[in-house]
Image (cartoon, rainbow, N blue to C red; front, side, top):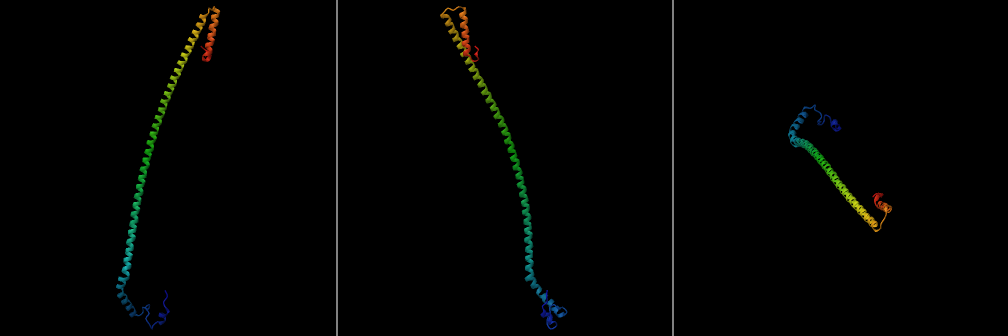
Length: 184
């Protein structure tokens, strides 16, 4: 800080507040300071002090609020994690129950398919047996017809034993040709 030259040049002629060698100047400075101190304290220092205290209170309140918000956030995070863990456990139970139901349904479907295939197989066997019986009945009917036809041919004319053999051979040959596989 620089001192104005006008005060320095005046030296002993005038009042220099920075020169404390004179007792009177020092005394008046202390008296003026003492008189103005309550005014300064009331007008300047009081509001400044109150403003600083209010600022400190707001800062403390903000810190307390931030700590409370942090604690609330931690509690909320813990609650979310707990509910997430519960949801995961619930989802795992649901998936396991669905898997068990799916396996049970798979066994049911396989059992139903097995029963249905057995029924179809039994029905096919029954139909095959019926067709076989029908075919055997038709063959028997043809054999009877052939036998009757052969007897009618024999009765119409008198044939010797060589003719009988020829007739039977031709009947067997014609019956073998009509049946599958060539066997009578």
